[in-house]
Amino acid sequence: MKLDGLRVLDLSLFLPGPHLTMMMADHGADVIKVEPPGGEPVREVGLRQAGHSTWFRNTHRGKRCVMLDLKRPDDHALLLDLAREADVLVEAFRPGVAKRLGIDDERIREINPRIVYCSISAFGQTGPKAGRPAHDLAIQADTGVVSLNLGQDGEPAQPHMPVADMAGSLMALAGILMALYRRERTGRGDHLDLSMQDALMAWLPNVVGPPFAEGRDPVVKQERSWGGNAMYRLYRCADGRWLALGGAEHKFADTLFAALGRPDLGALCHQPPGPAQDPARAFLAETFASRTLAEWCAFLAPLDVCWAPVRTLTEAFADPHTRSRGMVFTDPGGGRHLGIPIRFRDEPGRIDPKLDPPGASTDAVRRGRWAR
Image (cartoon, rainbow, N blue to C red; front, side, top):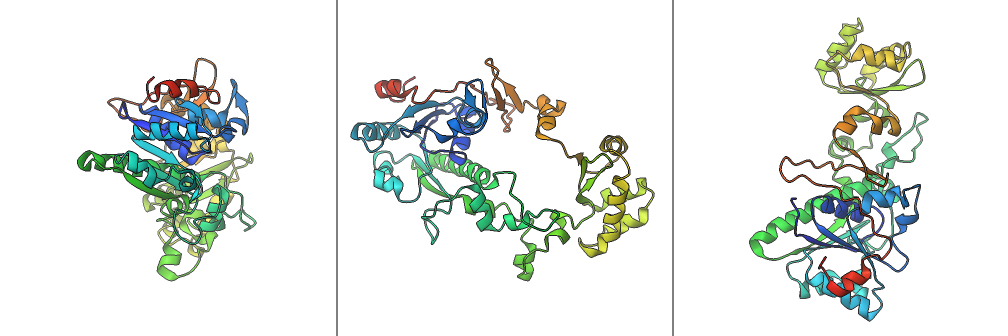
């Protein structure tokens, strides 16, 4: 596999760091997860299946778990021994904590100049907010993303995806791999300061037109991405289910409105999003409300138009396409896992469903360090 032989030391908790190191484990990296004396919190969060929380199962498979109290000299020394031979170290302490524990980037690189040291935090290692604690919701709110997530009543709604966490995870993975690539030429590692807020902001290139170009906040319901375009919007069907139109290119609008007998309204969708498209939006809302979702799926299936039924999560994971892509994996014990989204032709990733109980590998790691 692509990361065979890579040694990763994971000191992070919750979602961003553990998710990124799990992706590395899926592609062959040897990951040692260091849990604090109380254990990884997500072991006890949410519903359980086959003896483990589904959250833990989908962020910690294939890792060896050790439990260390870094305030104890022998545990601290063991961590330094592991870091001395590691290729990557991932930590998600609040800025300043790693230094107080004597495991900050400067200390670790003294004993291992080749290590890629990744610090994941809410707001980064520098700046006025660096010391503030925050999880996903607060970061989304502070970044302006929650203000875009408005319900039909115009009030902000609770986000349904941990996009700050996941943006942080994926940006950290990209940064680590860049640093490892550069290390092949220089022989030196690096320190990656990964702010989840920075990562989330970098995911907004398609929606920053109003503040960047005109110095104003978006008028959410009139903007292209949030319903201002008739062809990029949710519509209610006769049975209470919903349909998504998800492609605003002119050719798709022309095709759909011609099929519905109103080619004149397709021309309105050639104009910018907003009030000019109100007649097209009103027509589609009335039209889609006249039949069930199943009837509209049958009608739209032969058309070259971007659309999809609004599925439940259960429906989405039961979909034949999802299963054909391997995005649901059931291990021999009956535990279900999210599949591997990074698909290589050569040396593909492989799911190792093994899940260590708390501290299960501590004694073995004490004896042999990285040896298996």
